[in-house]
Image 1 (cartoon, rainbow, N blue to C red):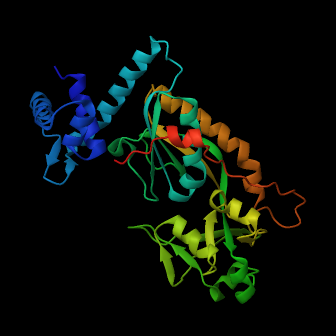
Image 2 (image 1 turned 180 degrees about the vertical axis):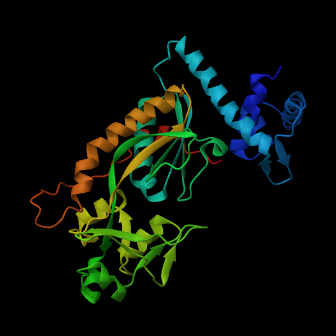
Image 3 (image 1 turned 60 degrees about the vertical axis):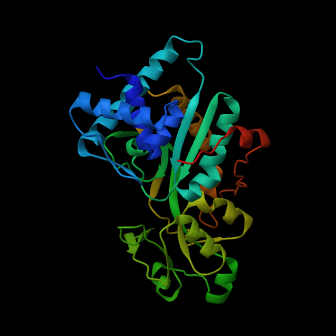
Length: 334
């Protein structure tokens, strides 16, 4: 019979990338951790991990078993909370994943504020513009912009979003304002291209329908925060999520362009594993995120409203981490 502690060791080893590190976290010596993993694989009759001196790699059977272990351990945690006084409290470690720009400006501050409300909770925030596998990385919730591509996950919408073309005042003073998508051929376009993918295309909604531009530029980055930094520095035009640049637009550091030809709308979503029970920390944090994004949605979207629309621009204020939140939100390395 497989023991829950062995399951915990296996899941922790995958998350940490090290069996020894997982053993230390759970209070086992490296030798005991190795014996427990061998016992688990023997009981199942399959190899779960390919182990080397530098890294652990899940086998095909290991990936399948890991997904089920994560769900089982979450259900056990939920059952324990259901019969304790802490049923509605967040405790343990909350692991959150988000894109770099969105994470720095919105998700990170929200996680710190959430930790300040729950003294028994630790927070680990992982920022990356690549798509992270929640099961493999041991992530509780992930915040992403755009469509859900993983059938194993469920999504809840946090807010509306869309991309906006923008440039720094200094750049526009030198090169002028584009008036139509065709004008972009004469401008320095900053291109976002993630590893293994095509460059991000720029799509605008015109009277004739959607018009897509495939920008070509000398500056290409695989991270959205670098694209934003280059745009702020006046190196060219960027096509960014309004949630990433609303504060810059409000402060006059960036100018929204072609606002009468808005990009198709999308959404900021929070994703979590598709199972019946979520740990209280994840469930409560999802609710907290929905409230946080809803409170700022109108102001953020107004930052790129078409000129002359009559829609008043509200000041976009990013949430700030107070001293207590910084102290309580422990950002732990993998």
